Image 1 (cartoon, rainbow, N blue to C red):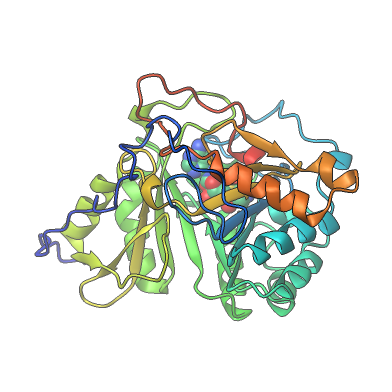
Image 2 (spheres, rainbow, N blue to C red):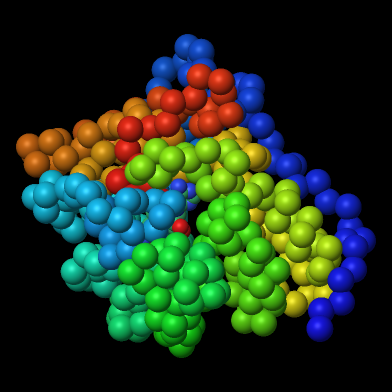
Length: 365
Ligand code: SAM
């Protein structure tokens, strides 16, 4: 049985810098300087953008309750999806502008046929980090091919360690398949496996310690994600999310935590390791402790728009340009303009916050 001890280490978990121009949600920069035309992708607040999330499809083989309705989702016609050639082209321009990290996502990226082929082509561009976020349902059969193609690592979503509850939350999926996918990913050399858990009040928050124990037993990095106002049903409300601070307190009362060694560069998860040296967790507290001040991310949607923030409806559409003979310089201008238009913060906590028109699966999480 686990010995429960109070955390001996007082830790402030909201140590991230605020945006230089005020709190998250501040209005667009009033910077009068011109958009840079050389150098890295910087926004008016000086944040350099070197992390590109690429959604390869808005389709998914699951219907997680906090993401999509069970029925009635309308998906993009296939002709509107960027082709792999188009994705590689945008990624190549981004690489030349200093983007060093790529994450493939969706929808569910593994439902797109031939994904390992895309990974192989992206790998030749020399990104320092090439990762995939997946629900794991189709991963076991593809892990070796993805790894051989040059994928570095995977994040696998798993919202419960109890089979019936897992299926209730994710609809259509099953826990055994996802646990087997984690094993397959590790066997294929996709390290470290990170496990994404969206915590929902009253639904799976009684599993926080189970997930912490899972992290300790398996060496997988469990990341607890706050529920964000990005569900397609528009049912989000603040009372459903479980604040990262609470997760920290509950885990550290059982197993004391301390900040993990910082990895270079900004990251959405605040990382903590167990003081006894056994395992690590992450907290992605996007709502209660926004990390906009160090945001380095931009997104390419499956239908070819550049977005500078999950929560901003500002999109720079690239598809028309790509399909009408636009040059790489044109693509670069769009990437720069998208980053230059970024706001200081996502604004979820502002009184006038309006949720974005597109939901998580349509943007690419
Ligand atoms: N299908 C893949 C998966 O399940 O990991 C990749 C796409 S999914 C949109 C990416 C991540 O976003 C998953 O970890 C999922 O749990 C999370 N997610 C989806 N909707 C969310 C929401 N409203 N708030 C917080 N996280 C959400």
